Length: 192
Image 1 (spheres, rainbow, N blue to C red):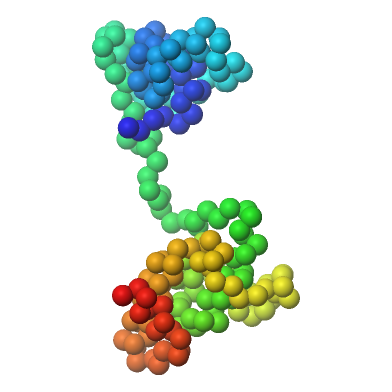
Image 2 (tube, rainbow, N blue to C red; image 1 turned 120 degrees about the vertical axis):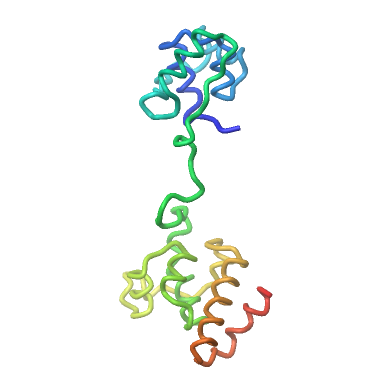
């Protein structure tokens, strides 16, 4: 079941601004009715500012009015409020602690799989073509400290993702008639 963003703050707003029952609010916010009652009594969620689900397009005002008139009615979360798996093109999030390792992973892929395209490396490691080029040219700000290290061991990608990228690059190189580097088929065999 999908829940609204910030369920407790949403519950605070619904308690303060609507005539919905505790059960209706609990059902919509994924909470227990007693927890909603505790919020209403001021025992829980003190200091939490209400989060308006109407203004944030999680529910319509008409749906709230319908449920206020019918205590057995249930609010429906708008499908536009549900987070999609991936919205558009954008870099994959890498935790701050692992970002310092990214140039090492780029150097590893460039050294061991030179036939992998920059766009594939960028997607695999959540980086930019500009950063890849700087690592390749040794113009990266930290190039003196970059040591090629396996991105799987660093936790920047899964082994299966690396295998898929290498296999695709191998297939493309074979199709174009380019010879593969000696160790390039290593990961492609693991992927099969």
